[in-house]
Length: 387
Image (cartoon, rainbow, N blue to C red):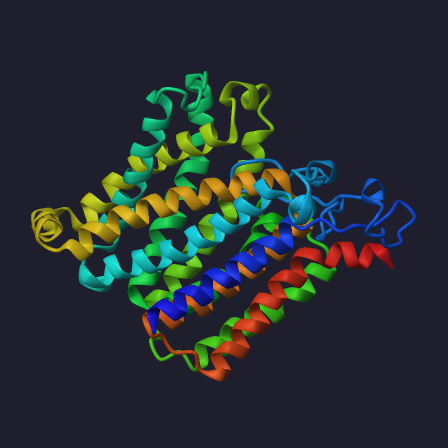
């Protein structure tokens, strides 16, 4: 049964990835190119890019020209941007398996009464080991040339990244993964409030009108949640708050003159932020669960479910987040919104099937309304501007 479910999720991920990597054979005049006129193709992506402002996790939004792809090779694959397809596929699969391995590690370690803060911190630690390895490995990643001032400027982003991850892990330890993901999909509501009232960035009326749809969907999904827990709801909301702060702080960080050149690559920026976030998380888990450290070490040694899934979830977490930043670099704001929406659906449905979580029709309806509202929020300004 689990094998067939995994095949279903992988198939869904491939289909979504192909949609974003596919190029459409249109001529300059807008008509369909015939099968005998390959030189007349326009290889712009099927999900069309538009000039739209947006903030990414660790990089600036790519311009529309970044999305234009070129066919690699001939034959059936000539209409696909293979690297972009691979980015989307492994981003989706990595996120899917992170949520499963994370939940398995948390359950085996005692759930919310066990070691959620310890696990969240060590997950970031596993990613940091990978980042350090990439800097020292032959033919690995070039090292950044950042200054002490650059590191200090990156601290707010790292702190928000740490808070968002730790709160998210605690939420997933306290309730169902599907419920936590539904609540986390309401992040735009938090981002809108912060942007408007803290950072002084005006949010359009059209976006404000989308927020009741998002919040209503989350409330509807919560009504029939069998594993509902206030701690899960509150923790997921705190994670949304940290994530919203992180997006705004990252935008300020990337306005620092010369910082991009000193970092070198998006991967370096993600690595440094992850290392700083891990170091900040250590005091948190020591205060919260430090007295139980000996018990956790013994559990780690004797329980392979905890040890394997802790390491696996840490690698999946780091990997899918870095792939997400690489994908964002190659796509437009609208494509990102569509991709995030598809990813949420795959994770919520797929993880619920594998872990046996409830998929009540009312919960699914609320999920659909909430995620649909998030997607509408992401594109509404472009739709209004076209009229």
